[in-house]
Image 1 (cartoon, helix red, strand yellow):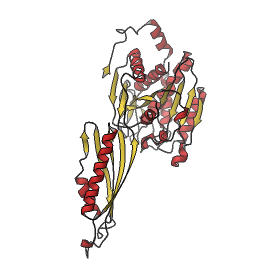
Image 2: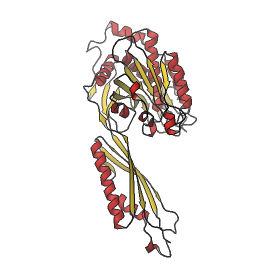
Image 3: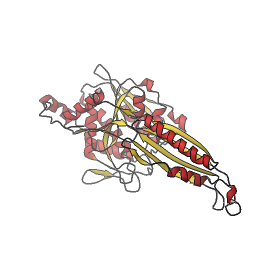
Length: 392
């Protein structure tokens, strides 16, 4: 699904196009300084206050109408989702750009280290936070490029959500009624600029509690019902890992028992299901339920299963206007375009649920969620140019 057409061959390498490229030059020093500034701000999930305040200042300086919602009230965090609107000079539909504010741990005390070859890393004891600072700075610099050039642009809406890393909780409570754009680009994918994910899975998280009966492990173990043993028997019958090409299942934690001399009366496991087909994920959840019920009943234990649909699967057609627009911009800039799928979630899962046709774009982050995370200055510049063209 790659599209790597040559600019000159397709007739887009015109004098006018070259003039536009020159006018939309990216300020490398400003881009790098802003990246380092944002990386240095602690913004783990539900603690995005300082970053939210800084983003609002920058958006106001660009002429945006800025609002912060009350998402913090829902979760006990210290900041809400930050939304901004900039009136365009071109009539017609606008565009929505988004990148999340929060990071995973270890994310306290981050620092951007600039290497001589243009790579940017962390100091090695924390994540870098390129997920998703790369997306944030590319959006801001791309908008600045267009505003400073004086070239016409569409209406621009931006959304910087909280708590994306904990199952997109910020956008779960966002009021999408204030969004005008039906075309969205979420900068939250690893890999080189020019990659876009059109498909993402349903994700169901579940917790299973097996309740048995406590007894003294030495004096009368036969009077107990061993909850850990029941749990292990059930888990051993459940296939895990890659179930098929579009579905995975993982039971990630198991805990239970009170002491080594007590027959455990309770055991809890937590897991997740991911599938590109929502119905298949629900069917697999029911199979898990039945396996636990059957195993527990055979031992006179009881079972409680709680589940939540954290992400809803979607697939955007290649013929969609959002995709075609992205492909055309990549062609214009000479960026190899790759359309792909992701098995992770993003705020785009919630965009699609609210009738906004979005795709997830790579913003040039690599090895996210690890202390080896890095990005490249070249990717930041390329991402900013892409954003500038998207809003034009």
